[in-house]
Amino acid sequence: IQVNFSEEMNRETYTGNIYLTDSSDGNVVMQSIGSELTFYQLHPLSTLAPNETYTVHVTTGVQDLNGNSLDSGGNARFQVAAGQWNSCAIDVNGVHCWGYNGYGETDVPTDLVNPVAVAAGGYHTCAIDDNGVACWGLNNHGQNDVPTDLVNPVVVAAGMEYTCVLDDNGVHCWGRNN
Image 1 (spheres, rainbow, N blue to C red):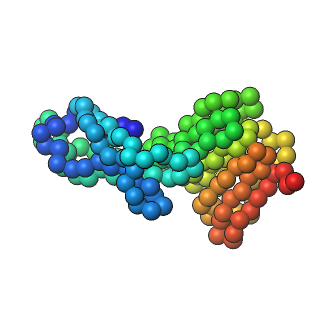
Image 2: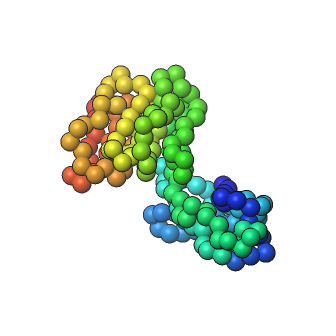
């Protein structure tokens, strides 16, 4: 993983720290191992798990070649989700999916706004963003037919032919039910 800065940094002024934590328990899972002029590289201390959310922490203390503080984007969250045939990730630029795409499961909708969670299923994918839950890909059992009565969804899970979401009212599932 790489943390990018908005311009070249002066390595002699770097007094901060860059590390990655598991958002659920705060444990450090990656630490900085080296730098170039515009980024720091992170090395894993443990295996990153699918469907987990991690937070990148960048502390202050980096300056550009003119002595100005650099903007690293602050804390940035990302998540990785592995489905049966495809995988997806969220980073500061949005949702990215790759792998098998026979049913459009890696064709991320362009209208997602600030996605915070992603789940990869059998042949479909779902994400939570500022607008709620969005699903795409194969919809042969209604696994992409998101209920309209969800309230503040926070967790999404996608199975082979079903989807579940946790919101303020509990767990909701739709799609194949056998």
